[in-house]
Image (cartoon, rainbow over all chains, first blue to last red; front, top):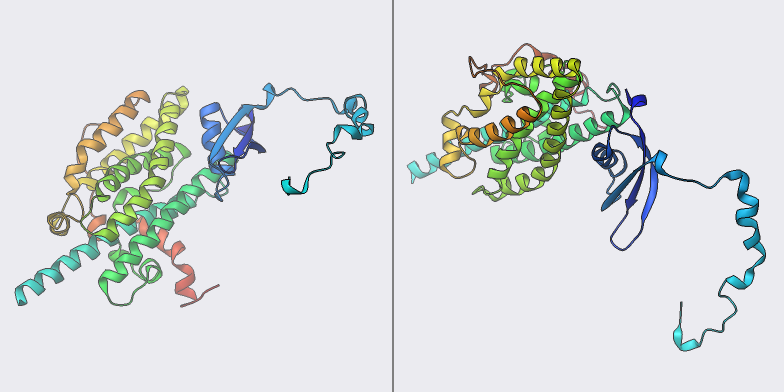
Length: 94
Length: 260
């Protein structure tokens, strides 16, 4: 039965103020049931305050074969990290 | 003084009876639902049903725990659940009906949830604070149970020709077991008079409303109210309860006092 249902990706907001995080996937016949199933499968241990679901087929992903051109160029650009500033002591921990 | 004391004792017996009925309904239904664990048609449904079973068993601990306290003979929730015989169980017959197919389990759940929901809503205003507190906690769980079973009954009733046929058959089969939910006896009247719980019959209108609305959307037709099965509330059960108890109570019967 479940093989006839589309796959959904589940995102849970752990607590107010945090972002929704991808926690896994499940099968469901439609969005409403996907939210209910996500509640039952992924929030049993008090993990969340909000659920998002999206059809897995609606997600566009980068191709693993392109990881060179996509990600390697940023390896050599340390100046993009804001680590070259002297933080005045009064500011404290940032 | 003697008369007042006697009334208090009578009320106490009625309160115990009421609490045991609440706890036995959730215990037996929780056990029935737990029988699906590992057998549901889809992993998602399996977990959802197990959650429902666990909610019901959690509620059992509260109702039977309070029942033991009210009784005052030192019986714990466990003692009441595991060491009573069938004739002492007070659950309605509906909850001991066999699971049947998945649709039938959901139909039984829906018919019970609708009643459970309207009852707990009323119990939130109970004159007994302990009862009101349990109801408050359980209502949150049961609202979700009803939401889910109602939704699935509609989906399957208004689904394929096969799912519709099965849901209608389940409804026809279970309908004669719904009448018992609304039949009151002297002990129900006593707790109602004390403001602890509503009279069973007073819940019928709200239950009818919830059920009729869902069944209409599900394209299912409730049978006419004919002969209604009853007896569970008085300890007169169907042949199924013994099998449930032999499973449920096996460990404590074979290894008395066993813990792990």
